[in-house]
Image (cartoon, rainbow, N blue to C red; front, top):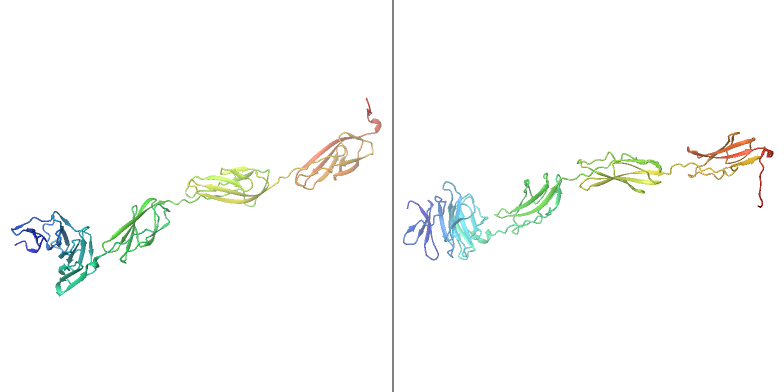
Length: 449
C-alpha cells in the first residue's frame, strides 16, 4: 500500500482492528476489508508509528509526530466515539505506546524519553529516564501493569517501575501578607510562602504576580515595593518542574502613606513669663502638612485647659506654671502635638492706703502736735512700702507711716502716698484745720431733750 502502513491493533473483543500508517492513514479492518473510518482531523498527514488498545476496549491510542518534517510528538486517543488529543508536547516523536491493565494509564515511548498520562485527565508526566544515546522504538507493560519494558537503538533495553512516574502536586501556602491587609506604597511588603511544600520532596520554584503590575519576583520569601495604590490580587505559583503548577492568592490594599502634619509654635516662647492680666498670643503660623492637606489647630494649657481652636489665639491664663500644647490634625486623623513651658505670675497691684489719724475735719490748736498715722496701709502683693506725707500748706512732712508734726495755722489738706517700689503707688487724703480756740464756732452738746 502506498500509504506505508506501520502498526495494527485489534480491539480486545475482536470487533475490528485499527491500522495506522506513516502517511497519516488510520484504517478500520473488520476482516471483510479496510475502511478509512477513524481518520482524526485535522492531522490528516501526520505520521502515526504505533497503535494500542487498553484491555477493556475503552480506548485506543495512536502515537507519532504532528509534523512530518520535525520530530514533534502527537498522542491521540479514540474512545469508540470520538478522537481527542493528549495535551503533552515533548518536542520529539513517539514510536510506541501501551496501556496499563485497567486502562487508566497510558505510556508512550519517544526518541529518548518515556511519558505516562492519565486517561481521565490526559495530563502527561515525564519520567526521570533520559538517554541521549538511545532512540526508544518499542515498549510494553508487564502483565501486572507495574513495570514498563522498552527497547531501542544500539541494543539497549530498559525496565522502569510505573510508580516512578507518580508525582504529587506541591502545596502552596501564602504565609504573608494576609488577605485584606493594608500596606503603604513605597514601603517593602514581605511575600512569604514558607508554609509551602512538596509531598515528594521535589525542589520548587516560586513565582509571585500582581494583577496590577504583573510578575513581582521569584523566591519563597521576597520583599516587594509597590508603587501603584489600590487593590492587588497577589498570586503565588508553585511549580515542581514535573507538570504540576499550583496557585494560591491573597488580596491586599495598597495606600499612599499619610505623612503627619508638623506643629510649630511661634509664640509663646519656651520659658517665657507673663502676668495673669496680660493677653498672651498663641501663634502656630509655622505649622504645615507635608502633603498640603488642610489642618486643624487645638491649643491646650495643662492648668487652664482648652485655650482655642485657631491658628492664632489671644487669651489670659491664671497664675502658675503652664505646659502649652499645640495639636495639629490632618483630614486622615493624624494628630501631632508640640509644647512649650511658660510661667504666669500675678500682676503687680497698687498699695491700699488708710489714714487712721487725723480724721476728716479734725481741728487742732496752734502749736499742738498732730499724729499722722497710715500704719494700716498694706500692699496686696506683700511688697515693702515707702511713705511720703505732705500738706498743701506746709509741704513735705515726713516719710514714715506714723509721724508727729506741728502744722501752721489754717486749713490743711494732708496727703500720704504709699509706693510699692515696682511702679505703683496709692494716695489717701484728709482735711484738718489749725486755729485758736476763740476762732472756733461754738459746739452745742445736748445731754437731754
